[in-house]
Image (cartoon, rainbow, N blue to C red; front, side, top):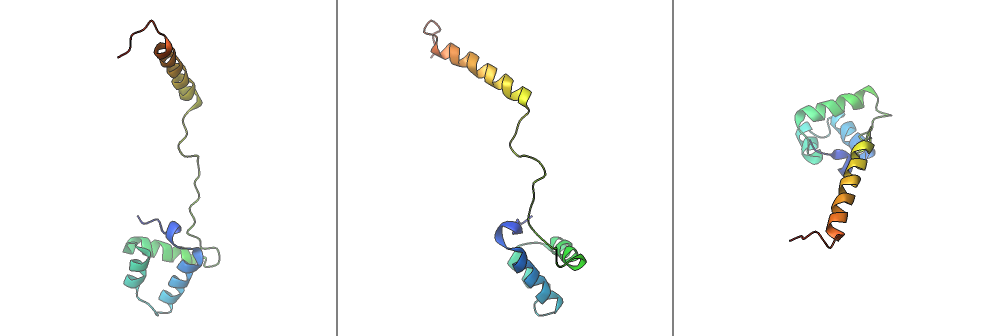
Length: 95
């Protein structure tokens, strides 16, 4: 799926949909500009028709990305300190 929220603003998409609904431009041309397939086009068009004023393509993340459980993080830190001590210990031969 194309990430159109990174390439276009809401106003640009609204303008394209307005021109499509006025039959100034064809669907295939709009799809080509946006880089989306037919199904995605009609999903966005339906959202636009339902509420043109509040239509938005902005993506909002619901949860944090790239986070791990705090318990797992403490275990990783514990294991890394054990490895660090082994590396720094001159009595343990490492090759």
